[in-house]
Amino acid sequence: MPELPEVETIRSQLEKEIKGARIKDVTWDVSKLLLPNPEKVKQTIVGASFTEFGRRGKLLLMKLSNGATLAAHLKLTGRLLLRKKGDPKDEWQHVVISLDKDRELRFTELRKFGYLKVLQDQKELEKIKQEYGPEPLSADFTPEVLNKILSNKKSAIKKVLLDQKNIAGIGNIYADESLFAAKIHPERLANTLTTSEIKELHKAIQVILKNAIKHRGTSTDAYRDIYGEKGTFTQLRKVYGRQGKPCSNCGTIIKKIVVGGRGTHFCPHCQK
DNA sequence: TAAATCCTGTCA
DNA sequence: TGACAGGATTTA
View 1: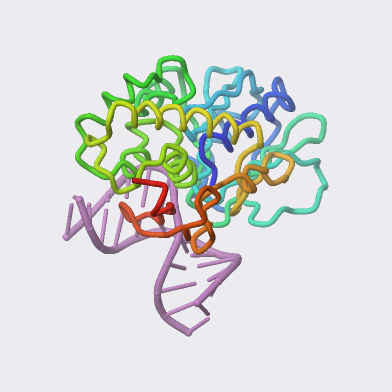
View 2: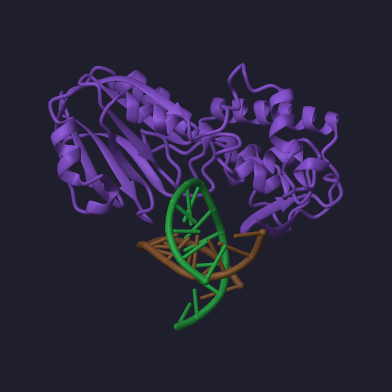
């Protein structure tokens, strides 16, 4: 599923390919994917051009020349694909943003949980940005900041990592992978982690997210980049989706349990 | 805090 | 053929 590394991959690819591109038209066949409503989206973005591609957590922020921002959340199965006019229709294609030079930005969504949302102005953009916790790859995300986040939370560390209000951009794959790398059991209560464990976890989060970006994300499921290509971090994951297989570190069989209602993969021997 | 909700392809 | 997966929000 698209988490921080996947959205960051899409962000940088779009920046490279369509910065400055002008929006000519928007068409759709599922209204609920366009917020606040399709007509408003069309009216706002047609005629404008893309000036900047940003990201906050898993939310892609496409800034426009008219001061508005088109925000995209891909949830579990959303894709943004860059195609040429006349290319064969993509699977689950529901929104097409027609650009200059016969290009199309297509939004495909199998489960229809994701959305494209117009943010009218800077104020609306800032309001949404501040709903998230720190960006885990920014300079102000330090072990001390992580310590502060965890110290007053009496719930499972896995749950705390998934809450976007605590840290922005970590989803099920990278939560499990980070906890494995830090040798921390996913059900440990957040406020019981030692200083050195927090340091390890902080490092694991940063190393894993950076490496996943380098490999253009993980494609265990529907995720694809804007060219329709799979990410290659899939081959590097140690626990996510590897239940029943041996741990790469000790050979113990990887277990899958449910934590906070989410499938959670870990090594019962390595993670304490 | 836990469960239901949205949605549909995949798997048992 | 029914259970399951899952991000974020809503409801119990």
